[in-house]
Amino acid sequence: MKFMALIYADESVWETFPDAERQAAYAQYRAFADEAGAAGMLAGGDELAPTRDATTVRVREGETLVTDGPYAEVKEALGGFFVLECGSLDEAVQLAAKIPGAEHGSVEVRPIYVDPAEVQP
Amino acid sequence: MTVEEAFREEWGHAVAILTRVLRDLELAEDAVQDAFATALERWPRDGTPRNPGAWIVTTARNRAIDRIRRERVFREKAELLARLEELPADEDDVTAIPDERLALVFTCCHPALAAESRIALTLREVGGLSTAEIAHAFLVSEPTMAQRLVRAKRRIRGAGIPFRVPPDHLLPERLPPVLAVLYLVFNEGYAASSGSEHVRADLCDEAIRLGKLLAVLMPDEPEALGLLALMLLQDSRRLARIDSSGELVLLEDQDRSLWDEGRIGEGLRVLERAVSLRRRGPYQLQAAIAAAHVEDRPWSEIATLYDRLVEIDPSPVVQLNRAVAIALSGRVDEGLALVDELDGLGEYHLLHAARADLLRRLDRRAEAAISYRRALELTANDSERRYLEGRLREVS
Amino acid sequence: MKYALLIHGDDSAWVDLPDEEKAALRAEEMPQWISLFEELSKADPGVSGYELDGRSTARVVQVRDGERIVTDGPFAETKEIVGGVFLVDLPDLDEAIRLAALIPTAKHGSIEIRPLQE
Image 1 (cartoon, each protein chain N blue to C red):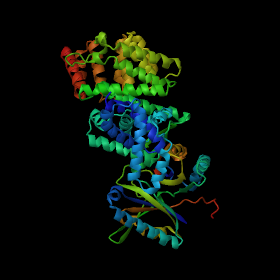
Image 2: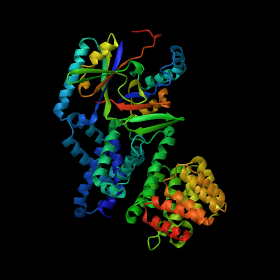
Image 3: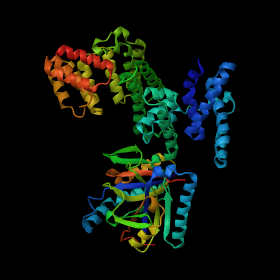
Image 4: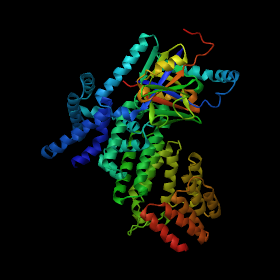
């Protein structure tokens, strides 16, 4: 089964990290990815650019409305995600707990929807 | 012409060309700024170049090369320097470069940028105003404005906003933000919600200047022409709006000899050209209303124009103006009823001033006084305050 | 430029519906999603997308002082949750906006366009 692990963290904290700390954090993420990958439990992942580069689109009454910024101004923004392959939701949660973001932020685990009619690879 | 004046004239051109080539607005502006510093040094000594625009582009190109060599890592350097090869090193070849200012305007006014960023960017990049001038005009500190500009430029790069004139099918939704920015700048100058008068006239001039540029770059776009006509016609009354003691003078009481005939003539000609393109729009209608005022058309005609405008733009302000026009055409009770029906303008001082005025004309003085007081609570402008106080005394 | 299109939608209207009704609603919207995916594929043949299950299967995990804390439900306390993500490589933001507007959820929810960090 596939799951998405959405990583939420305080962007302003990340912005103030000196370079050495950022490199250390990236190293921790790489270590997680290597470990999960070796166990066959990783199917992808990406870091998102900060919310100051976000744009939000809504369509209301046929008109496309474009606004500067993310969907909502919140203290902890979505900063990236992993796509995990696990046997169950509990297993995915256990794996997600090892994501560095779980320590300084929060990780939301979501099963990826599978259409019962679709053939699974 | 001073160095500053020459640069302000050529700023938009140079920044646009460098941005097209470098695909980086921040780097382009820095290069033009560097060229400015060079000019301040050299021109007083060597004299102003015969073709300042070409000199600026060529010098900005060279300063960009310096910056790239100094600041960029190897991978970026090669690519950026290669792009600069597209620009001629020879001043004489610069005139053949196409005008990229329209792309610059649309980029600065992109809907994915915050509204206040669009205004600041347009004034800085297209208008060539300094950060200090823009800060002063919008009553924020220079560091605040500088930061707003830097963030906006970085966002253009970070979010992936393209540097281009939108394709035709997108123009209907992309042109209104551009016109809105220009008109906002004009209104900042014209209505002067607070601040010194002197700065404000400069803003009107700048908005008109940018409006003329847009009309030249988009000669078949009737709303661009309509906006220019509107600004010219409104601006023609600038000197008559405030009398010698700083009091606000209503249109019907203005000394028409103070109206700028040149602006009026120009505005009417531009409006005529817009109308000839046979594609109506809100700015053209507003310009027609302004023209009707200037030509002293009867209020009933103006009311009819507002009837047409309110169909395209049913905003409360337009509805208010329509109600006032109807009242002044003789249908006072109808106008008052329309004002009373209006939603969403409770905090708008002109609503209460308009209601007060209509009540005054109906000789309902006590009610008029209430509305004048409410209007006074809501206005921050000294001239308007004194006008309202005068009317309040009349009905008390 | 690589973008993530994050689909924010309010699922409260149909989350408690019986399975049959949910299936019916899906079937109704499916043509729009199919044509959207065709547009996305035209723009970027390498496009990928993930639809996420509703809020009832969402879990939030945090590690504080070495201790693992798991709570039910999505992280955000808004009415709208992330219902899906598209990952797509496009020439510029205008293209991203055009495609985002084609996503059916855009009509009642919001599509957040986030560039991927380089």
